[in-house]
Length: 260
Length: 248
Image (cartoon, rainbow over all chains, first blue to last red):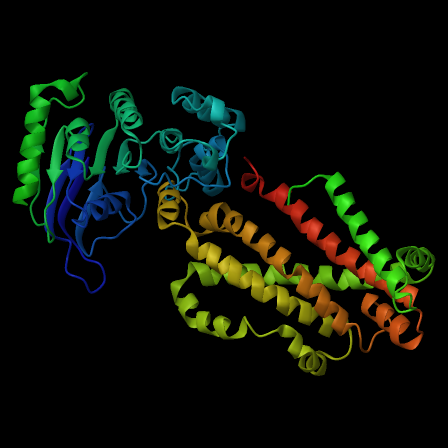
């Protein structure tokens, strides 16, 4: 689904973060990108999201070279990115409103798809996701009035309402307490299988990488030239946290990070 | 602001009581007691006071509308574009603290003695405040917010309508609230010359030419009502337009 070919990226007048980097993501896979801060993992995610342009090389998703945000790619960030002046329901509907704003132009919104769905159908889709994610009671509140976990679920609802096939997440649960984080990790794995998503999670936490990544890309110090991948086929099965396999993968990742 | 009408009425009563006590203690025509002024106010309302009030109100409202229409987009542009911000930031930094009232003679020389000069002056006062606050607000928007809205498909136009515009509303209203007092003060100064319309003229002519002190105080009360009314109007607008700021 995603092909990265000979990617080189550098911020203006700085040393390259990626140099001649190749990487492939298959449809329906769940990847975690693990590395210390400053290693370029967020940069890689922003490149996938079309929010940064490669200095050299190509980044192809579904056959199209990525030059701007792709309508079917969803992005979820650590700080939620919600509009403080919009209610939970309005935030969840933001993507649909934006598509309505541009029409099906193929750049900002998927081409050819009926964007003329009635306002009622849009509201029904939004309400359905709010209900699914347990946000129905807080739908009329503002982001400042709800908990961090509810905010992140609002951001997830806003993305899933658009029916993405690729979901990119940058430290999505890093500012949440442990029980909330675990609940959302489980929810995410459920949605991954149910919605046939391709999942890419950026994290600095070994445990999170081992829980959410069937394959884990470990990034060391820049410049990054070749992918280091740790396979983790057990991720996503129930109670994976308490298995020996999980602990072994965590230990391997620890060793990899130290080596890198 | 969040207090009840009863507390507000109490404050007004306290103010009137202090005024009355002072007037009784001083016992001079230059400080008539509230009831004398109330009579003068009542008489003025039946004559030319409403006309003066409306003339002043019109000048402030017109300047405010112009300032919002021109300064808010300018502030947004400065806050959004680092290049523009770098170019004009130092200029704003230099000009912002200068009291615009010192420009009264200059503005009258350039724009003539008509209402245009008065409107330009108040416009200048409000504009600087709006530009600075809106710029800071737009610059303070978290890049993560912008990126995630972009990832939902927003281009420049949508970012303006869905992010920058609503984000700058509270800044515009805060700027208006902060500068409404100065605006009315400068309005008074500009109405001292070359006009026979407006509360500034009314206060000045009654105080220093006709020596009709109760009428002068009636003008002062009207000017206070004008300032307070604008202040309350901004408050109400904020409640209406920015409900998320007041959601508990």
